[in-house]
Image (cartoon, rainbow, N blue to C red; front, side, top):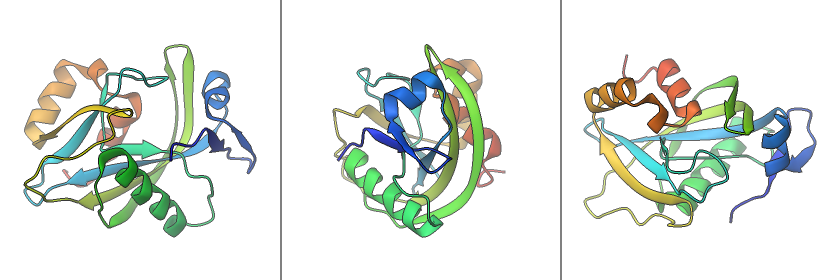
Length: 169
């Protein structure tokens, strides 16, 4: 189920598009999925998305409807991962960060909770084609090279996550 509401940092709810048009601070989560060889799963957002369509990003992201505990946000992130990418993975909370950045006419103003999971499967991923255009697995070296060469082929929050992420240090 795709939600049209976001939880604002003041505890109220707001329409997702309105929050992004007005740049209202709200909560989000981002999921990083690795395989056992330490390759990272990327998804290319569907071009029809209301912002950042066609850009590469982390395995999935979304907006929790409650912010009562890391465990509850973890469950929301795991559910969204299954809805968007068809993947079930136990997720671990890594860290959170606040950021504000323009995305065309919209503004991301989020407190983003980052989770990590492992997924190994030989069969192709069965992703939600409404949300995702494509996916790929990348090595650290491939990703660093491509992000440096083509930074705007990636979502703004994903580039920020890569700067903060500890797993590849």
